[in-house]
Amino acid sequence: MKLYPVILSGGSGSRLWPLSREHYPKPLLPLTSDRTLLQETALRLEGLPDLGDAIYVCNEEHRFLVAEQVTQLGKTPAAIILEPEGRNTAPALTLAALYLESRAPDSMMIVMPADHVITDRPEFVKAVGRGISPAGEGSLVTFGVVPDAPETGYGYIKRDGAIKGSEAFQVARFIEKPDVATAEQYIKEGDYYWNSGIFLMRTSRWLEEIAAHRPEILECCRSCVDGGAEDSDFFRVSREIFMSCPSDSIDYAVMEKTRQAVVVPFAAGWSDVGAWSSLWNVCPRDEAGNVVQGDVIASDTHNALLFAQHRCLAAVGIDDVVVVETADAVLVASKDRAQDVKDIVSKLKESDRHEFKAHRRVYRPWGSFEGVDAGSRFQVKRLTVKPGAQLSLQMHHHRAEHWVVVKGTARVTCGDNVFELHENESTYIPIGEKHRLENPGNIELEVIEIQSGSYLGEDDIVRFEDVYDRVQEN
Image (cartoon, rainbow, N blue to C red; front, side, top):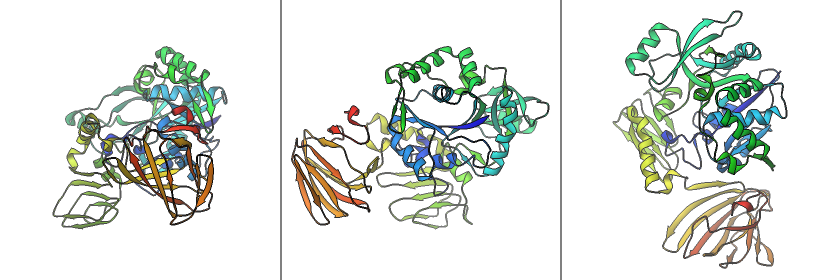
């Protein structure tokens, strides 16, 4: 029976602001290595026999970023299923199961969040192997992390009797996040595990269980898949139907209700990286106990997490702190208050500030753009266009643009004219004129764009043609 990874990439990771943003969330960030958390998840099961290509479920806003990160690994996804809006993990898994049922009905799924860290990959692969037999016999397997501390930020799983002939246990019950005293008691008793949110089951068994316990979710998701369509590298479900789907987690919808729940214990350096303090726990530290990334100089500073992205970060005489510097925001927090970063994000969102949504550099399927300067009726951006890529044929109602090529060669469409620009050459795009920018070369194209006009928002774009199928998003 073939095993298909189902990688759920729907979380926003607000507690990891300012690195994690709504439009560039935690799974897409390289936090513990040169690879992103999503890429590490995609590589996590290498070595298992009968492993199929992964199915990814993500928000449609992140589709090109997910696709590019998978391509960078040299992998081909079985599918990238797009959710119009997050509805928690139960609908996401149900969409993947229905998609898989129509293409590989006699299959098994290993369900993994895209934003977790597992430092001991071989041990995790062994744990998955221990779950194959009970899952093949019809159990819904979850993986319980052997706790090494009375953690209050995780849910727990209490085990029951051992399953004969395996290293798995029946699940006695699932438990919400406990207080410190209760967590300490769990550790002492030894029958409790952290709930990892990782699951293993036959595809058909999940569909049977969701039908028994949340039939309205199954009905809605089935209609979404039946009304969905392939779109380039993606599978789009019916937006109108999915927006009416109930929101629920895998645990609440099924695992806490089924009589077939089984837990396989494992100890493989797992963390859900739910806050900066969690990242400090799983990352290598220097002799002073500091986790350092970027251009950082620390003096008489201990047990701190210090991240710098764009400039020199200096820390003197401070302990147990988190300092994270990005191009447009700096976070300074006590490490024991790291969970409260979400309150800052809430305030930014209430104030409709851009810092909660996106970084100064914004990624697009053709490359990226980065804000350089802005003022009344003008803004300056640096566009980077990948070799062979092109922007849509578009126009703006409220702004004109000046383009200056600083690296590479640009092919420009402006009205009925098509021409090339080389380094140190420029052109002007009037308000209301159809235009397109392309990179016909073999190196990245860099263009300085000066916008001027009465309104400069990103929503002032009317697309006429687009190789990335974004015309429908007008």
